[in-house]
Length: 310
Image (tube, rainbow, N blue to C red):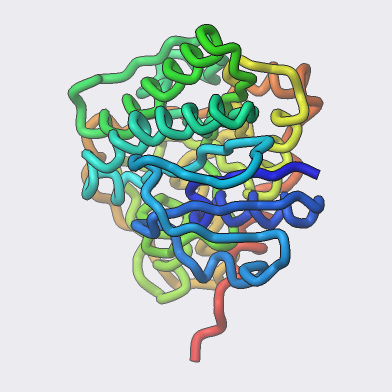
């Protein structure tokens, strides 16, 4: 079995990924500075024999004793609320963090996995977005700290592949949700769920006609594993092509929560993408992967995972 370092291991996706790797029998080293990650996400396996946790900022020098088979770089401030509050940290984890983890993989002779994002496509003028689409990103815009950190990260991964013959994987992640997601995350699904369960009105920005495509966490993690097991060293979209309007999502959450909440509209934030939908032709062909969990099923699982109010 492999020995795998997962940065951002206490985060939403990081914890799910650590759990999956441990179930498969791998040794997992999770690393997180706990700015947005939560140790509670690791409770189920924190004391497992093949798991260790290191509180560390990946923008600083990383020392890991012993051999490594994989370095998986998931660390990032992925929520608009968090990266807006910490733009410099967001840029540093995408630039310095990627550089440090690539250097570690090179030193250890390990394979390297980089979690990129659909935000590299910006406010797309092509829908759905294939990997070949170069995007429509404002490098000086309000979302640029996140978008550009990932675009730079992808470029750095390519440079290490070409110059140092590093074996790399790049996943472009589209909107993902599920258990372990912070309700104060600021992204639309946890926000809607929290509002619906507390009886508050659901806040829809703009007229709600903008679209997103929501992938359940277990489906995305399966995509991660298939990408790691493949030989694909170019970016691959991982997301659910079931494109929904924000209004549709809001109505579905209200229904599933049995809530009396209404929908209220607020001004659309500047440069908020109007559409977001992955073209997963490459993932289907190269990985034999596509999502299997419907939006309704995934939302029900997510709500069922929440603690029962006192």
